[in-house]
Length: 338
Image (cartoon, rainbow, N blue to C red):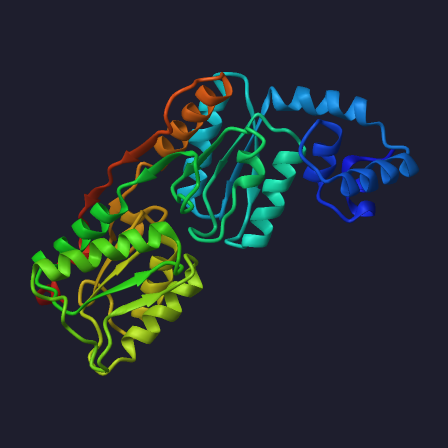
């Protein structure tokens, strides 16, 4: 028996378009005729499928995140699931791998399957487009990362505060050539953490320092281990390498630490502070200082907000901002302790 995906593929349209044709959505007459003709040729049964989709809508939500392999998103997903289970909602997990095209396909699938709602950590602040869901009235909550201009509820971290507090700590320990390995350019979390780092440097008169080439000590990574390693290697190759590094996420910190060890600059000789814990930070030698993130609470709060919208709550859009905290360990003991 033909499925909605078979029709979409044969008609050269998205599954969401097929769904709109058979569920009263806005589609051009020419495209609708093409879809109906293709459906008839394939023996597609829209009424039965539509009933099935409506049943799914009442019980399934989507969670679209960049990388379930990152412990931050693993804890976030658990928070979403625990909150969803309390109201008998099931969660479908989708990994985008920071790929905007892959993210768009998952959003299209969520629309086609008429999910009850979707929680999404955007792959891009500028390019993520939630309109396929928003325009059809599907409840959406942005979590961790909020796309620019999206009219949806959001649960985020106070990233700027966390970046500023981390950099202030490094300054207080005597470090002066402080670098930042930021995340992907254009990601809201990366931009906000970088802004906090720069604000702290400026407050202490360090904002004008250069890396020996006339540039600053900022390098961008990809939120992955290898990206952190490459960025750290670039920083260490400078005429005046940094004496401390603030890394904008946990996986890049792993790569940065590996590069420091390969270069014989084990912390705290070069201070290292991570935005988010690496797994078992106390077992790493030296133990790693970090900005602690309420990952589970982030997911739980996002799911609660989504449940309110699914239940029909009519109120202004909400943005919930959760605070981070600083956990000091051995990797930021100061250059004099090296």
